[in-house]
Length: 244
Figure: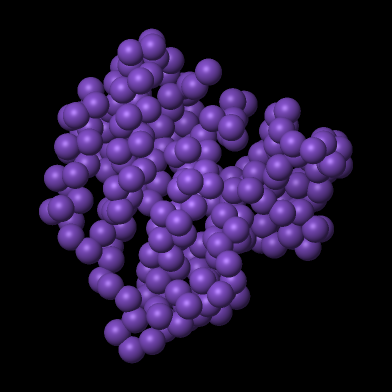
């Protein structure tokens, strides 16, 4: 999986920049509400695995505990939350880059129109379900900051594997740990118990290969990602653009 989580390159698409923190919290809040609703109203993460996954993501994004608590109370309350549904769109960006867009919407017609508009405007095209997802693997991905070099690579790798991780990747400023999606919560909890914290923790679509772009195409791809990230219905954007 070498080359996937170049953290300084992908943080824009993951909504982790400080300037986008409020928007990221709004998206996570929506995920928390849906996780509770789809889990039968259960707000105990020990008995709602999807909720546990979203809470781990929220904490990695530094979402305050009070915010998380309010979202859970809203979801569990009478008529708690809007009627959102999860819809995934697939297509091609400039230069044939494979793009997967995960959305959560209360109006599928609005969202479908927006996705088509974003793709068309920036040199891509909206495809059919399955047109690019075959070239991605769903993985749990945990990223540990090591910009201050407080961790030893071998020690983190051994801890990750002992906790049940599938793979490990070291970069200059971070460590990326991959898990089977079904093992994500257990691995995250085990590493947390070992006093590790994450700068990103979520289920991702990891590309099997990467696509390079020329300067013009790269500029369009940046604009496409920005437009999608700014769309209130969009939760995640995954792609196989190999950024420099």
